[in-house]
Length: 353
DNA sequence: AACAAATCCAACCGCTCATCA
DNA sequence: CTGATGAGCGGTTGGATTTGT
Image (tube, protein in one colour):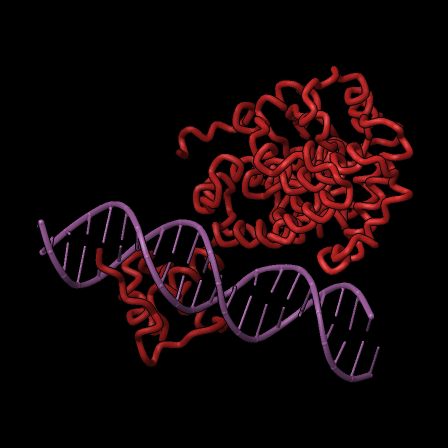
């Protein structure tokens, strides 16, 4: 397949930001002659740009139907839903968002949505809870439960070599985790408050635990607690069938349509946090030890609040939502993002595939 | 106030696909 | 069939802006 020539191999062509004058020339030309034939367009329009650059400038910035301004909650919702099905098919996603370009959506995803999901303990690629976090919890949980030591006796910071592997925040997190479990005298640890209080730290877990060093950490704890025979290994964990887990926890993992709620929640309006807690507390016991060890990472926070605006998708491009904190937006985002998306997706994306 | 770090986003780059001679 | 070209896509870059110290 032949490779098209690029702007870079043509000398004398301007690069970089467009000037108002260039924009005017491009707009004038396209208004008179229409777009297309991008290769010859710049010459005819009197522009010292390559056709590719002209096309991008027109499509991403100068088109009259371009919608500028912040993304609405509804748009964000659509992006997340579609991304869970389509992946990084930005142009396909953009087709469902009038006035938005693939480039804009891609940028918004990378700079906002992706970070939100990571903060919530959700893998932005798979749209599922990050197993690495589950693994860490499992390692700690298993190690302690199989150890004769209490968390008071087990100071993670003093573990040989562990301090160099984990940052202080992570150590504090792990220690808190173990401590909370120790205090509960039960394996049925509700991590809700713990997770909510440690969202920034949990986000750090991702990067830290993704590295191969995680295995070293596991080995360190493993050795220290002398629980080698029963410690869950990584293979066991990756074998967890999350779909079965979702079936087992139908409420915890259910799709919640944010459009059913108002944003912001009216004062006094019961939030789903309460409902969620009740549901979790009343859920049937999960029999396997593996499932037993699963924390609530991400799940409870995902259900922590309700809400969203009901701004029409085609509303003004200057739609901004004021008076809501970033955390509230995160919560909103988390609500609309759930794990059963493909089967409960409201949008008909079949035509796009 | 000054500087550094982080964030954002327009624009670029390299690639693939479709079409046509 | 083959190669040239146009068009489009997704990933990346770099400069401007914002935020933190």
